[in-house]
Length: 125
Image (cartoon, rainbow, N blue to C red; front, side, top):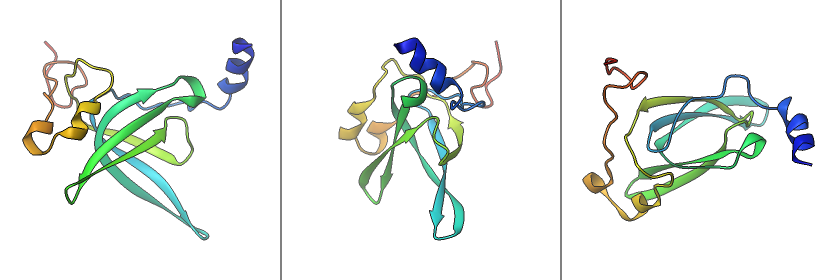
């Protein structure tokens, strides 16, 4: 049964899926349709979770807006997600960063990943 579902979903998966991980600071470019017009809106924040696989894969992005935490869940393969750009990679040891919900300011910072390929400016050793 799962093989049949995977075969059907294969045609709908995005070709160039974005490469990002948990803890990364990302800019998610979302297509917004207002009437007949379409525009791109950027949602910036930290990836705190990834969940699912195939067509059902989603990721949760959290950011602070005027002292309030705002989380948004995006499907990886959705046509409304135009692009995901990684601004900073983080070095984390967990797959879900829900503990960030209870932290503010400097306590919510994550260690930056250094010295790895693709870490945004770090040289490969």
